[in-house]
Image 1 (cartoon, rainbow, N blue to C red):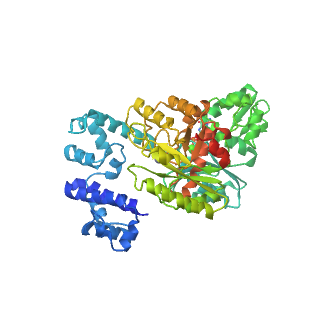
Image 2: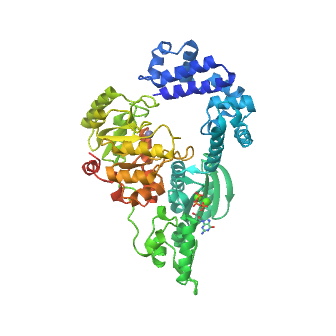
Image 3: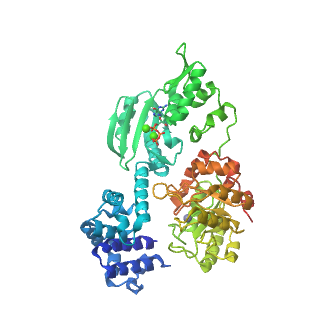
Length: 570
Ligand code: DGT
Ligand code: CA
Ligand code: CA
Ligand code: ZN
Protein backbone atom coordinates (compact mmCIF):
# COMPACT_ATOMS: atom_id res chain seq x y z
CA UNK A 1 0.00 0.00 0.00
CA UNK A 2 1.12 3.49 -0.75
CA UNK A 3 -0.65 5.00 2.27
CA UNK A 4 2.50 5.52 4.29
CA UNK A 5 4.31 6.99 1.33
CA UNK A 6 1.51 9.49 0.68
CA UNK A 7 1.27 10.38 4.36
CA UNK A 8 5.04 10.86 4.39
CA UNK A 9 4.79 13.18 1.43
CA UNK A 10 2.15 15.34 3.15
CA UNK A 11 4.22 15.47 6.32
CA UNK A 12 7.26 16.53 4.34
CA UNK A 13 5.27 19.39 2.83
CA UNK A 14 4.19 20.36 6.35
CA UNK A 15 7.84 20.33 7.46
CA UNK A 16 8.71 22.86 4.79
CA UNK A 17 5.59 24.94 5.43
CA UNK A 18 6.82 25.49 8.97
CA UNK A 19 9.22 27.86 7.29
CA UNK A 20 6.47 29.85 5.69
CA UNK A 21 5.18 30.21 9.26
CA UNK A 22 1.85 29.16 7.87
CA UNK A 23 0.42 27.31 10.88
CA UNK A 24 -2.97 26.94 9.25
CA UNK A 25 -1.66 25.02 6.26
CA UNK A 26 0.88 23.10 8.37
CA UNK A 27 -2.01 21.81 10.46
CA UNK A 28 -4.10 20.99 7.42
CA UNK A 29 -1.32 18.87 5.88
CA UNK A 30 -0.52 17.12 9.14
CA UNK A 31 -4.18 16.30 9.70
CA UNK A 32 -4.59 14.86 6.21
CA UNK A 33 -1.37 12.85 6.68
CA UNK A 34 -2.70 11.38 9.91
CA UNK A 35 -5.99 10.39 8.28
CA UNK A 36 -4.25 8.66 5.37
CA UNK A 37 -1.78 6.96 7.68
CA UNK A 38 -4.64 5.45 9.66
CA UNK A 39 -6.74 4.53 6.63
CA UNK A 40 -7.68 0.87 6.50
CA UNK A 41 -8.14 0.78 2.72
CA UNK A 42 -5.56 1.41 0.02
CA UNK A 43 -5.19 5.10 -0.86
CA UNK A 44 -4.62 4.11 -4.50
CA UNK A 45 -8.06 2.51 -4.53
CA UNK A 46 -9.62 5.67 -3.04
CA UNK A 47 -7.81 7.73 -5.67
CA UNK A 48 -8.89 5.49 -8.54
CA UNK A 49 -12.51 5.70 -7.37
CA UNK A 50 -12.27 9.50 -7.29
CA UNK A 51 -13.05 9.52 -3.56
CA UNK A 52 -10.00 11.45 -2.28
CA UNK A 53 -12.04 14.46 -1.26
CA UNK A 54 -14.40 12.24 0.74
CA UNK A 55 -11.60 11.64 3.22
CA UNK A 56 -11.81 13.84 6.31
CA UNK A 57 -9.23 16.63 6.13
CA UNK A 58 -8.62 16.22 2.40
CA UNK A 59 -9.84 19.22 0.43
CA UNK A 60 -9.43 20.07 -3.22
CA UNK A 61 -5.88 21.43 -2.86
CA UNK A 62 -4.47 18.40 -1.06
CA UNK A 63 -6.42 15.98 -3.28
CA UNK A 64 -4.80 17.55 -6.34
CA UNK A 65 -1.34 17.10 -4.88
CA UNK A 66 -2.00 13.46 -4.02
CA UNK A 67 -3.29 12.98 -7.56
CA UNK A 68 -0.14 14.47 -9.09
CA UNK A 69 2.06 12.36 -6.84
CA UNK A 70 0.28 9.10 -7.62
CA UNK A 71 0.31 9.83 -11.34
CA UNK A 72 3.87 11.18 -11.70
CA UNK A 73 5.67 9.74 -8.69
CA UNK A 74 6.78 13.26 -7.74
CA UNK A 75 5.33 16.62 -6.80
CA UNK A 76 6.38 19.94 -8.30
CA UNK A 77 5.08 21.91 -5.32
CA UNK A 78 7.38 20.04 -2.92
CA UNK A 79 10.38 20.48 -5.24
CA UNK A 80 9.74 24.23 -5.23
CA UNK A 81 9.36 24.37 -1.46
CA UNK A 82 12.70 22.60 -1.14
CA UNK A 83 14.37 25.10 -3.46
CA UNK A 84 12.98 28.10 -1.58
CA UNK A 85 13.97 26.89 1.90
CA UNK A 86 17.13 28.56 3.15
CA UNK A 87 18.21 25.64 5.37
CA UNK A 88 19.51 22.17 4.70
CA UNK A 89 16.49 20.24 6.04
CA UNK A 90 17.91 16.90 5.00
CA UNK A 91 21.16 17.36 6.91
CA UNK A 92 19.50 18.88 9.96
CA UNK A 93 16.64 16.39 9.89
CA UNK A 94 19.16 13.57 10.29
CA UNK A 95 20.15 14.92 13.70
CA UNK A 96 18.15 12.93 16.23
CA UNK A 97 16.05 14.99 18.60
CA UNK A 98 15.25 18.08 16.55
CA UNK A 99 12.15 18.28 14.41
CA UNK A 100 11.08 20.79 11.77
CA UNK A 101 9.57 23.15 14.36
CA UNK A 102 12.85 23.41 16.23
CA UNK A 103 14.79 23.77 12.99
CA UNK A 104 12.57 26.69 12.05
CA UNK A 105 12.97 28.27 15.48
CA UNK A 106 16.74 27.92 15.28
CA UNK A 107 16.80 29.47 11.85
CA UNK A 108 14.58 32.37 12.83
CA UNK A 109 16.37 33.25 16.03
CA UNK A 110 19.95 32.14 15.40
CA UNK A 111 20.18 31.90 11.60
CA UNK A 112 21.15 28.20 11.83
CA UNK A 113 21.19 26.75 8.32
CA UNK A 114 23.10 23.49 8.60
CA UNK A 115 24.77 21.14 11.05
CA UNK A 116 27.95 23.24 11.25
CA UNK A 117 25.86 26.26 12.29
CA UNK A 118 23.89 24.15 14.73
CA UNK A 119 27.04 22.88 16.41
CA UNK A 120 28.48 26.38 16.69
CA UNK A 121 25.30 27.75 18.25
CA UNK A 122 25.14 24.87 20.73
CA UNK A 123 28.79 25.24 21.74
CA UNK A 124 28.29 28.95 22.33
CA UNK A 125 25.40 28.14 24.65
CA UNK A 126 22.92 30.02 22.48
CA UNK A 127 20.43 27.20 22.07
CA UNK A 128 19.66 26.81 25.77
CA UNK A 129 18.52 30.43 25.87
CA UNK A 130 15.76 29.88 23.35
CA UNK A 131 12.35 29.51 24.87
CA UNK A 132 11.20 25.91 25.03
CA UNK A 133 14.65 24.42 24.38
CA UNK A 134 16.92 24.71 27.44
CA UNK A 135 20.28 23.20 28.46
CA UNK A 136 19.23 19.52 28.16
CA UNK A 137 18.16 19.98 24.56
CA UNK A 138 21.42 21.79 23.85
CA UNK A 139 23.45 18.93 25.33
CA UNK A 140 21.41 16.35 23.43
CA UNK A 141 21.98 18.21 20.18
CA UNK A 142 25.74 18.13 20.69
CA UNK A 143 25.58 14.42 21.50
CA UNK A 144 23.48 13.70 18.41
CA UNK A 145 25.88 15.62 16.16
CA UNK A 146 28.80 13.66 17.59
CA UNK A 147 26.95 10.37 17.10
CA UNK A 148 26.00 11.23 13.52
CA UNK A 149 29.61 12.11 12.77
CA UNK A 150 31.05 8.99 14.39
CA UNK A 151 28.83 6.59 12.49
CA UNK A 152 28.61 8.38 9.16
CA UNK A 153 31.79 7.07 7.58
CA UNK A 154 30.93 3.46 8.26
CA UNK A 155 28.28 1.51 6.37
CA UNK A 156 25.93 -0.98 8.07
CA UNK A 157 26.95 -4.57 7.34
CA UNK A 158 23.65 -5.31 5.57
CA UNK A 159 24.40 -2.83 2.81
CA UNK A 160 28.12 -3.58 2.54
CA UNK A 161 27.47 -7.31 2.40
CA UNK A 162 25.13 -7.11 -0.58
CA UNK A 163 27.61 -4.84 -2.41
CA UNK A 164 30.41 -7.29 -1.60
CA UNK A 165 28.34 -10.23 -2.83
CA UNK A 166 27.60 -8.37 -6.09
CA UNK A 167 31.32 -7.73 -6.66
CA UNK A 168 32.17 -11.39 -5.95
CA UNK A 169 29.46 -12.54 -8.35
CA UNK A 170 30.72 -10.16 -11.03
CA UNK A 171 34.36 -11.23 -10.67
CA UNK A 172 33.35 -14.89 -10.91
CA UNK A 173 32.01 -14.28 -14.42
CA UNK A 174 35.58 -13.67 -15.63
CA UNK A 175 37.23 -16.85 -16.92
CA UNK A 176 40.72 -16.04 -15.67
CA UNK A 177 39.48 -15.75 -12.06
CA UNK A 178 39.89 -18.92 -10.00
CA UNK A 179 38.92 -18.17 -6.40
CA UNK A 180 37.21 -15.08 -5.01
CA UNK A 181 36.61 -14.41 -1.35
CA UNK A 182 35.44 -11.54 0.81
CA UNK A 183 37.93 -10.66 3.58
CA UNK A 184 38.19 -7.85 6.16
CA UNK A 185 35.44 -6.76 8.52
CA UNK A 186 32.77 -7.90 6.04
CA UNK A 187 33.92 -11.49 6.39
CA UNK A 188 34.02 -11.07 10.16
CA UNK A 189 30.40 -9.84 9.92
CA UNK A 190 31.17 -6.74 11.93
CA UNK A 191 28.08 -4.56 12.25
CA UNK A 192 29.55 -1.63 10.35
CA UNK A 193 32.09 -1.70 7.55
CA UNK A 194 34.81 0.84 6.72
CA UNK A 195 35.70 -0.63 3.34
CA UNK A 196 35.14 -3.93 1.57
CA UNK A 197 38.19 -6.18 1.05
CA UNK A 198 38.18 -8.81 -1.67
CA UNK A 199 40.80 -11.39 -2.55
CA UNK A 200 41.03 -13.36 -5.78
CA UNK A 201 43.43 -15.88 -7.27
CA UNK A 202 44.37 -15.92 -10.92
CA UNK A 203 47.21 -16.70 -13.34
CA UNK A 204 46.49 -13.38 -15.07
CA UNK A 205 46.15 -10.79 -12.28
CA UNK A 206 46.31 -7.76 -14.55
CA UNK A 207 43.26 -8.92 -16.47
CA UNK A 208 41.34 -9.31 -13.22
CA UNK A 209 42.33 -5.86 -11.97
CA UNK A 210 41.29 -4.34 -15.29
CA UNK A 211 37.92 -6.10 -15.20
CA UNK A 212 37.35 -5.04 -11.59
CA UNK A 213 38.06 -1.36 -12.26
CA UNK A 214 35.54 -1.40 -15.12
CA UNK A 215 32.61 -2.87 -13.15
CA UNK A 216 29.35 -1.07 -13.96
CA UNK A 217 28.91 -0.02 -10.31
CA UNK A 218 32.24 1.81 -10.06
CA UNK A 219 32.13 5.59 -9.73
CA UNK A 220 35.88 6.28 -9.18
CA UNK A 221 39.03 4.24 -9.56
CA UNK A 222 41.13 5.30 -6.56
CA UNK A 223 44.21 3.15 -7.30
CA UNK A 224 45.25 0.53 -9.82
CA UNK A 225 48.43 -1.59 -9.97
CA UNK A 226 49.40 -4.93 -11.51
CA UNK A 227 47.88 -7.04 -8.70
CA UNK A 228 45.64 -4.70 -6.74
CA UNK A 229 43.15 -1.90 -7.08
CA UNK A 230 40.80 0.26 -5.02
CA UNK A 231 37.56 1.67 -6.33
CA UNK A 232 34.62 3.61 -4.98
CA UNK A 233 31.19 2.22 -5.82
CA UNK A 234 28.26 4.44 -6.76
CA UNK A 235 26.68 3.71 -3.35
CA UNK A 236 29.74 5.42 -1.84
CA UNK A 237 31.62 2.49 -0.30
CA UNK A 238 35.25 1.69 -1.16
CA UNK A 239 36.32 -1.76 -2.35
CA UNK A 240 39.92 -3.03 -2.23
CA UNK A 241 40.87 -5.95 -4.45
CA UNK A 242 44.05 -8.01 -4.27
CA UNK A 243 44.89 -10.75 -6.75
CA UNK A 244 47.24 -13.47 -5.51
CA UNK A 245 48.85 -16.79 -6.22
CA UNK A 246 46.81 -19.80 -5.15
CA UNK A 247 49.79 -21.18 -3.16
CA UNK A 248 49.45 -18.45 -0.55
CA UNK A 249 45.71 -17.73 -0.74
CA UNK A 250 45.07 -19.03 2.79
CA UNK A 251 47.81 -16.92 4.34
CA UNK A 252 46.59 -13.82 2.52
CA UNK A 253 42.98 -14.51 3.46
CA UNK A 254 44.03 -14.89 7.07
CA UNK A 255 45.99 -11.66 6.97
CA UNK A 256 43.36 -9.55 5.21
CA UNK A 257 40.49 -10.90 7.26
CA UNK A 258 42.05 -9.62 10.43
CA UNK A 259 41.34 -8.18 12.71
CA UNK A 260 44.70 -6.58 13.20
CA UNK A 261 45.05 -7.57 16.88
CA UNK A 262 44.24 -11.20 16.08
CA UNK A 263 46.95 -11.14 13.38
CA UNK A 264 49.53 -9.65 15.68
CA UNK A 265 49.08 -12.42 18.25
CA UNK A 266 49.31 -15.10 15.56
CA UNK A 267 52.57 -13.58 14.38
CA UNK A 268 53.98 -13.64 17.90
CA UNK A 269 53.03 -17.29 18.30
CA UNK A 270 54.73 -18.04 14.96
CA UNK A 271 57.95 -16.43 16.14
CA UNK A 272 57.89 -18.48 19.37
CA UNK A 273 57.76 -21.58 17.18
CA UNK A 274 60.71 -20.52 15.02
CA UNK A 275 58.38 -19.53 12.18
CA UNK A 276 57.48 -16.32 10.39
CA UNK A 277 53.90 -15.40 9.44
CA UNK A 278 52.95 -12.76 6.89
CA UNK A 279 50.42 -12.19 4.14
CA UNK A 280 52.79 -14.21 1.89
CA UNK A 281 52.67 -17.37 3.98
CA UNK A 282 54.02 -19.15 7.02
CA UNK A 283 57.79 -19.69 6.67
CA UNK A 284 60.54 -21.49 8.52
CA UNK A 285 62.61 -18.71 9.99
CA UNK A 286 65.97 -20.41 9.39
CA UNK A 287 65.48 -21.89 5.93
CA UNK A 288 62.87 -19.39 4.65
CA UNK A 289 60.93 -22.37 3.32
CA UNK A 290 57.15 -22.06 2.96
CA UNK A 291 55.57 -24.19 5.69
CA UNK A 292 51.89 -23.40 5.05
CA UNK A 293 49.84 -20.92 3.05
CA UNK A 294 47.33 -22.55 0.73
CA UNK A 295 44.50 -22.67 3.29
CA UNK A 296 43.78 -20.93 6.57
CA UNK A 297 43.21 -24.31 8.21
CA UNK A 298 46.77 -25.45 7.54
CA UNK A 299 48.22 -22.19 8.85
CA UNK A 300 46.26 -22.45 12.11
CA UNK A 301 47.25 -26.10 12.41
CA UNK A 302 50.96 -25.40 11.97
CA UNK A 303 50.61 -22.71 14.62
CA UNK A 304 49.33 -25.40 16.98
CA UNK A 305 45.69 -24.46 17.20
CA UNK A 306 42.21 -25.24 15.86
CA UNK A 307 40.66 -23.31 12.98
CA UNK A 308 39.02 -20.10 14.23
CA UNK A 309 35.86 -18.90 12.48
CA UNK A 310 36.25 -15.37 10.99
CA UNK A 311 33.46 -13.94 13.18
CA UNK A 312 35.50 -14.81 16.29
CA UNK A 313 38.78 -13.24 15.19
CA UNK A 314 38.62 -10.19 17.40
CA UNK A 315 41.25 -10.92 20.05
CA UNK A 316 38.61 -11.68 22.65
CA UNK A 317 40.20 -14.83 24.02
CA UNK A 318 39.55 -17.01 20.96
CA UNK A 319 43.21 -17.82 20.33
CA UNK A 320 43.75 -19.35 23.73
CA UNK A 321 40.61 -21.45 23.36
CA UNK A 322 41.83 -22.62 19.92
CA UNK A 323 45.17 -23.67 21.43
CA UNK A 324 43.34 -25.74 24.04
CA UNK A 325 40.83 -27.17 21.53
CA UNK A 326 38.02 -25.56 23.48
CA UNK A 327 36.38 -23.32 20.89
CA UNK A 328 32.57 -23.31 20.91
CA UNK A 329 30.95 -24.86 17.84
CA UNK A 330 29.19 -21.82 16.41
CA UNK A 331 25.71 -21.90 14.89
CA UNK A 332 26.15 -22.27 11.12
CA UNK A 333 24.54 -20.32 8.29
CA UNK A 334 22.21 -23.19 7.37
CA UNK A 335 21.01 -24.07 10.87
CA UNK A 336 17.95 -21.80 10.92
CA UNK A 337 14.59 -23.52 10.39
CA UNK A 338 12.14 -20.64 10.77
CA UNK A 339 11.69 -16.91 11.21
CA UNK A 340 9.67 -15.55 14.13
CA UNK A 341 9.26 -11.86 13.42
CA UNK A 342 7.84 -10.31 10.25
CA UNK A 343 5.21 -7.82 9.15
CA UNK A 344 2.66 -8.05 6.36
CA UNK A 345 0.16 -5.79 4.63
CA UNK A 346 -2.01 -6.23 7.71
CA UNK A 347 0.18 -3.59 9.40
CA UNK A 348 3.18 -1.78 7.93
CA UNK A 349 4.57 -4.54 5.68
CA UNK A 350 4.38 -4.73 1.89
CA UNK A 351 3.47 -8.35 1.17
CA UNK A 352 0.60 -10.69 1.98
CA UNK A 353 0.85 -13.57 4.44
CA UNK A 354 0.94 -16.04 1.58
CA UNK A 355 3.70 -14.15 -0.24
CA UNK A 356 5.82 -14.13 2.92
CA UNK A 357 5.21 -17.85 3.45
CA UNK A 358 6.13 -18.77 -0.12
CA UNK A 359 9.34 -16.72 0.04
CA UNK A 360 10.27 -18.22 3.42
CA UNK A 361 9.77 -21.73 2.08
CA UNK A 362 12.10 -20.93 -0.82
CA UNK A 363 14.74 -19.95 1.73
CA UNK A 364 14.37 -23.38 3.28
CA UNK A 365 12.34 -22.38 6.33
CA UNK A 366 9.86 -24.85 7.85
CA UNK A 367 7.81 -22.25 9.71
CA UNK A 368 7.28 -18.51 10.08
CA UNK A 369 5.45 -16.36 12.57
CA UNK A 370 3.50 -13.30 11.41
CA UNK A 371 3.93 -10.56 14.01
CA UNK A 372 2.08 -7.49 12.83
CA UNK A 373 1.92 -4.46 15.09
CA UNK A 374 -1.01 -4.13 17.45
CA UNK A 375 -2.55 -1.78 19.92
CA UNK A 376 -2.42 1.96 20.07
CA UNK A 377 1.09 2.29 18.81
CA UNK A 378 1.89 5.30 16.64
CA UNK A 379 2.38 3.02 13.66
CA UNK A 380 -0.10 2.90 10.85
CA UNK A 381 -2.53 -0.01 10.73
CA UNK A 382 -1.79 -1.39 14.15
CA UNK A 383 -4.25 -4.27 14.45
CA UNK A 384 -7.12 -4.24 16.92
CA UNK A 385 -8.73 -7.28 18.48
CA UNK A 386 -11.22 -7.74 15.68
CA UNK A 387 -8.55 -7.60 12.99
CA UNK A 388 -6.47 -10.15 14.88
CA UNK A 389 -9.39 -12.57 14.60
CA UNK A 390 -9.81 -11.84 10.90
CA UNK A 391 -6.10 -12.34 10.35
CA UNK A 392 -6.30 -15.71 12.08
CA UNK A 393 -8.75 -16.87 9.43
CA UNK A 394 -6.44 -15.78 6.63
CA UNK A 395 -3.51 -17.59 8.28
CA UNK A 396 -5.57 -20.77 8.59
CA UNK A 397 -6.53 -20.47 4.93
CA UNK A 398 -2.89 -20.02 3.94
CA UNK A 399 -1.92 -23.08 5.97
CA UNK A 400 -4.57 -25.16 4.21
CA UNK A 401 -3.33 -23.98 0.83
CA UNK A 402 0.46 -24.32 1.28
CA UNK A 403 2.46 -27.37 2.19
CA UNK A 404 6.00 -27.61 3.55
CA UNK A 405 5.69 -24.41 5.52
CA UNK A 406 3.67 -23.67 8.63
CA UNK A 407 2.46 -20.15 9.34
CA UNK A 408 2.02 -19.18 12.99
CA UNK A 409 0.11 -16.20 14.27
CA UNK A 410 1.91 -13.84 16.57
CA UNK A 411 1.91 -10.12 17.22
CA UNK A 412 4.43 -7.47 18.10
CA UNK A 413 2.89 -5.82 21.12
CA UNK A 414 4.10 -2.56 22.61
CA UNK A 415 5.41 -2.40 26.16
CA UNK A 416 3.75 0.66 27.61
CA UNK A 417 5.25 3.25 29.90
CA UNK A 418 4.28 1.32 33.03
CA UNK A 419 5.44 -2.05 31.71
CA UNK A 420 1.96 -3.32 30.86
CA UNK A 421 1.13 -4.29 27.28
CA UNK A 422 -1.25 -2.52 24.97
CA UNK A 423 -3.31 -5.65 24.26
CA UNK A 424 -5.31 -7.53 26.93
CA UNK A 425 -4.07 -10.92 28.15
CA UNK A 426 -7.14 -12.73 26.91
CA UNK A 427 -6.17 -11.78 23.33
CA UNK A 428 -2.50 -12.63 23.85
CA UNK A 429 -3.40 -16.06 25.18
CA UNK A 430 -4.97 -17.09 21.92
CA UNK A 431 -1.92 -16.35 19.79
CA UNK A 432 0.80 -18.86 18.96
CA UNK A 433 3.63 -16.50 19.90
CA UNK A 434 3.73 -13.05 21.50
CA UNK A 435 6.64 -10.75 20.75
CA UNK A 436 6.87 -7.66 22.98
CA UNK A 437 9.02 -4.60 22.49
CA UNK A 438 9.61 -1.03 23.58
CA UNK A 439 8.74 1.61 21.00
CA UNK A 440 8.36 4.69 23.20
CA UNK A 441 9.97 6.52 26.08
CA UNK A 442 13.53 5.88 24.83
CA UNK A 443 14.84 8.72 26.99
CA UNK A 444 13.47 7.26 30.24
CA UNK A 445 16.05 6.75 32.99
CA UNK A 446 17.77 3.36 33.18
CA UNK A 447 15.85 2.14 36.24
CA UNK A 448 12.53 2.92 34.63
CA UNK A 449 13.23 1.22 31.29
CA UNK A 450 14.64 -1.80 33.09
CA UNK A 451 11.57 -1.96 35.31
CA UNK A 452 9.26 -1.71 32.28
CA UNK A 453 11.10 -4.52 30.55
CA UNK A 454 11.15 -6.79 33.58
CA UNK A 455 7.45 -6.30 34.15
CA UNK A 456 6.69 -7.28 30.57
CA UNK A 457 8.88 -10.36 30.91
CA UNK A 458 6.97 -11.44 34.00
CA UNK A 459 3.84 -11.64 31.85
CA UNK A 460 3.27 -15.34 31.18
CA UNK A 461 2.01 -14.58 27.68
CA UNK A 462 5.16 -12.79 26.52
CA UNK A 463 7.40 -15.30 24.74
CA UNK A 464 9.99 -13.09 23.10
CA UNK A 465 11.46 -9.63 23.69
CA UNK A 466 12.18 -8.03 20.31
CA UNK A 467 15.13 -5.72 19.61
CA UNK A 468 15.92 -5.54 23.34
CA UNK A 469 18.07 -2.38 23.34
CA UNK A 470 16.23 -0.28 20.75
CA UNK A 471 19.35 0.98 19.03
CA UNK A 472 19.53 1.88 15.33
CA UNK A 473 23.10 1.40 14.13
CA UNK A 474 23.76 4.75 12.49
CA UNK A 475 20.83 6.70 13.92
CA UNK A 476 20.07 6.03 17.55
CA UNK A 477 22.02 4.93 20.60
CA UNK A 478 20.43 2.11 22.61
CA UNK A 479 18.14 3.22 25.42
CA UNK A 480 19.68 2.83 28.84
CA UNK A 481 18.88 -0.56 30.28
CA UNK A 482 20.39 -2.91 32.85
CA UNK A 483 20.97 -5.90 30.57
CA UNK A 484 22.36 -8.12 33.32
CA UNK A 485 19.08 -7.81 35.17
CA UNK A 486 17.16 -8.42 31.94
CA UNK A 487 19.14 -11.58 31.22
CA UNK A 488 18.59 -12.81 34.79
CA UNK A 489 14.88 -12.27 34.35
CA UNK A 490 14.96 -13.97 30.94
CA UNK A 491 16.42 -17.05 32.52
CA UNK A 492 14.09 -17.00 35.48
CA UNK A 493 10.92 -16.45 33.45
CA UNK A 494 11.91 -18.43 30.35
CA UNK A 495 11.57 -15.39 28.10
CA UNK A 496 13.48 -15.59 24.82
CA UNK A 497 15.69 -12.65 23.75
CA UNK A 498 15.70 -11.70 20.10
CA UNK A 499 18.65 -11.09 17.83
CA UNK A 500 16.91 -8.80 15.39
CA UNK A 501 18.58 -9.25 11.98
CA UNK A 502 17.24 -6.08 10.37
CA UNK A 503 20.34 -4.27 8.94
CA UNK A 504 19.80 -1.08 10.94
CA UNK A 505 19.17 -2.94 14.17
CA UNK A 506 21.31 -6.04 14.79
CA UNK A 507 19.90 -5.97 18.30
CA UNK A 508 20.98 -7.71 20.53
CA UNK A 509 24.38 -6.80 19.17
CA UNK A 510 27.45 -9.08 19.17
CA UNK A 511 28.77 -8.51 22.68
CA UNK A 512 25.26 -8.47 24.14
CA UNK A 513 24.73 -11.89 22.56
CA UNK A 514 27.90 -13.12 24.16
CA UNK A 515 26.74 -11.93 27.59
CA UNK A 516 23.32 -13.53 27.06
CA UNK A 517 24.87 -16.85 26.02
CA UNK A 518 27.15 -16.74 29.03
CA UNK A 519 24.14 -16.14 31.27
CA UNK A 520 22.41 -19.17 29.75
CA UNK A 521 19.64 -17.16 28.09
CA UNK A 522 17.88 -18.67 25.07
CA UNK A 523 17.82 -16.58 21.90
CA UNK A 524 15.91 -16.35 18.64
CA UNK A 525 17.18 -14.91 15.34
CA UNK A 526 14.40 -13.06 13.50
CA UNK A 527 14.44 -10.76 10.49
CA UNK A 528 11.65 -8.27 11.31
CA UNK A 529 11.12 -8.35 7.52
CA UNK A 530 8.66 -5.83 6.12
CA UNK A 531 8.65 -7.48 2.70
CA UNK A 532 9.50 -10.87 1.23
CA UNK A 533 12.96 -9.82 -0.03
CA UNK A 534 14.01 -8.93 3.49
CA UNK A 535 13.77 -12.52 4.71
CA UNK A 536 17.36 -12.79 3.47
CA UNK A 537 18.46 -10.60 6.39
CA UNK A 538 18.53 -13.77 8.49
CA UNK A 539 22.22 -14.22 7.62
CA UNK A 540 23.06 -10.87 9.26
CA UNK A 541 21.46 -12.14 12.46
CA UNK A 542 23.34 -15.43 12.21
CA UNK A 543 26.58 -13.48 11.72
CA UNK A 544 25.81 -11.45 14.83
CA UNK A 545 25.03 -14.63 16.78
CA UNK A 546 28.36 -16.12 15.64
CA UNK A 547 30.17 -12.95 16.73
CA UNK A 548 28.53 -13.51 20.09
CA UNK A 549 29.86 -17.09 20.19
CA UNK A 550 26.35 -18.58 20.11
CA UNK A 551 25.95 -22.27 19.34
CA UNK A 552 23.05 -23.98 17.61
CA UNK A 553 21.68 -24.98 21.00
CA UNK A 554 21.43 -21.36 22.17
CA UNK A 555 19.09 -20.37 19.32
CA UNK A 556 15.54 -21.70 19.52
CA UNK A 557 14.72 -21.39 15.82
CA UNK A 558 17.41 -23.89 14.86
CA UNK A 559 14.88 -26.49 16.05
CA UNK A 560 11.98 -28.02 14.23
CA UNK A 561 8.55 -26.50 14.87
CA UNK A 562 7.48 -28.76 17.73
CA UNK A 563 10.79 -28.54 19.58
CA UNK A 564 10.92 -24.79 19.07
CA UNK A 565 7.41 -24.31 20.49
CA UNK A 566 8.40 -26.36 23.50
CA UNK A 567 11.13 -23.80 24.24
CA UNK A 568 8.51 -21.08 24.68
CA UNK A 569 7.02 -20.15 28.03
CA UNK A 570 3.67 -21.81 27.56
P1 DGT B 1 37.11 -1.78 8.29
O1 DGT B 1 37.46 -1.77 6.85
O2 DGT B 1 37.49 -0.54 9.01
O3 DGT B 1 35.69 -2.12 8.54
O4 DGT B 1 37.95 -2.94 9.01
P2 DGT B 1 38.87 -4.07 8.39
O5 DGT B 1 39.13 -5.04 9.48
O6 DGT B 1 38.29 -4.60 7.14
O7 DGT B 1 40.25 -3.31 8.14
P3 DGT B 1 41.03 -2.90 6.83
O8 DGT B 1 40.17 -2.82 5.64
O9 DGT B 1 41.81 -1.69 7.18
O10 DGT B 1 42.09 -4.07 6.64
C1 DGT B 1 41.68 -5.39 6.34
C2 DGT B 1 42.47 -6.36 7.15
O11 DGT B 1 43.86 -6.29 6.79
C3 DGT B 1 42.48 -6.08 8.63
O12 DGT B 1 41.36 -6.63 9.28
C4 DGT B 1 43.74 -6.73 9.07
C5 DGT B 1 44.66 -6.52 7.93
N1 DGT B 1 45.50 -5.35 8.19
C6 DGT B 1 45.36 -4.13 7.69
N2 DGT B 1 46.32 -3.30 8.14
C7 DGT B 1 47.09 -4.05 8.95
C8 DGT B 1 48.25 -3.79 9.74
O13 DGT B 1 48.79 -2.70 9.78
N3 DGT B 1 48.76 -4.83 10.44
C9 DGT B 1 48.19 -6.07 10.41
N4 DGT B 1 48.72 -7.03 11.14
N5 DGT B 1 47.11 -6.33 9.71
C10 DGT B 1 46.56 -5.35 8.99
CA1 CA C 1 37.86 -3.36 5.32
CA1 CA D 1 40.73 -2.24 3.21
ZN1 ZN E 1 9.52 -3.36 16.39
